[in-house]
Image (cartoon, rainbow, N blue to C red; front, side):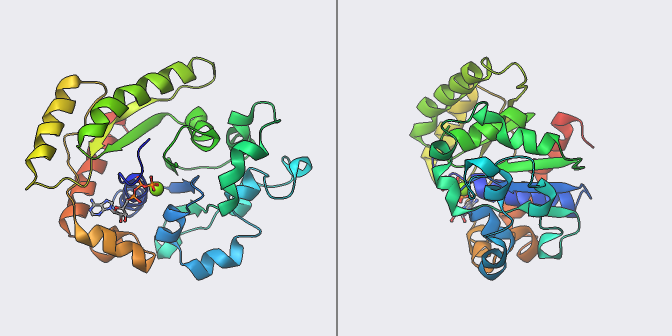
Amino acid sequence: MKGGVGKTTSTVEIATILAKEHKKKVLVIDLDPQTNATLSLITLDAWEKIKDTATIADVLGIKRGMSSRDEEFDIKDAIIKNVNGIRNLDLIPSHLELTFLDLDLVSIPARESVLKNQISKSDLSYDFILIDCPPNLTLAPQNALIISDYIIVPVIPEIFPAIGLPLLVNRIRKWKKSFAECNVDFLGMVFTKVDGRYSMHSQQMDALRKKNVIHCFSTIIPQNADISKAVAQSKPATIIYPNCAGIESYKNLVKEIILKIGAA
Ligand SMILES: Nc1ncnc2c1ncn2[C@@H]1O[C@H](COP(=O)(O)OP(=O)(O)OP(=O)(O)O)[C@@H](O)[C@H]1O
Ligand SMILES: [Mg+2]
């Protein structure tokens, strides 16, 4: 729910590591109108070229008026293949129009399932689909949750998560009960942007682990300047700084994820 905790960074780096190091076929779907995941994977110029014809807004049918939502647009037409030259790393870019998704879909039945329906009628074939969500439980994340197997929650170990995390977990479990077809569950939380010099971080990590609200990955992602520098170059840090401390940690996290879901 909180902004700036590393959701987009984690999506982009985990996806890149899965494709590059583990040779998995991976699709990133950017469901956040801020388009941060998109612009971490392709340049602004590249996005400008396709933004009016082939983004998540076309997949969800929110640009051309209600009547066109549907059958005509094939989700495959919005997929950019092998982004940044990374074999098997594909992207469905976002669009600013997604800001108004809740308004645009207000009168649509089963509005939580628009993305699911588009994916279901296509024969997409991926080992992993990672969906980057905005920081709230509006319609975009609901469209993501309904087709997902797992949720990964990045957490900066400060005071807020001690209150916010149980709220988020309860809220999603309650929400899920209204959708018989929804099988999503929490895979775990991962501590991000951890500053080893800051005693509050280690205290809060201990406190959150003890609370045992959901599984906690043992890998910790440190605060690392190389990770934030990579965004400016529209490339994952995994490509530019593959051996920096932050990326070494993300590589360990990916190993944990693969082990936990049995996808080796
Ligand atoms: N481990 C890290 N070390 C240093 N900087 C980081 C790290 N992880 C993320 N950042 C930086 O912190 C900022 C916020 O990260 P990010 O965009 O991934 O968060 P978010 O949860 O997706 O935010 P939002 O809620 O706005 O979507 C970015 O500038 C990113 O480059
Ligand atoms: Mg983000």
